[in-house]
Length: 66
Image (cartoon, rainbow, N blue to C red; front, top):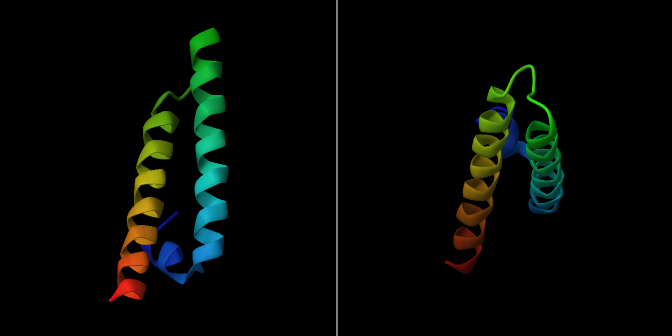
């Protein structure tokens, strides 16, 4: 997901997307532990995408508190 797409999401959508990405990342890690993935960089991209989503969520929560 690009940053512009992330900014367009509502807070509820952000939380849903975070949960979806985290479960997908966990599945990838398990699959990689059993047998190597064709593209192990997908794990890194998923981790970074989760970080982007969490950063945007925290930013919005801080804006609401201000």
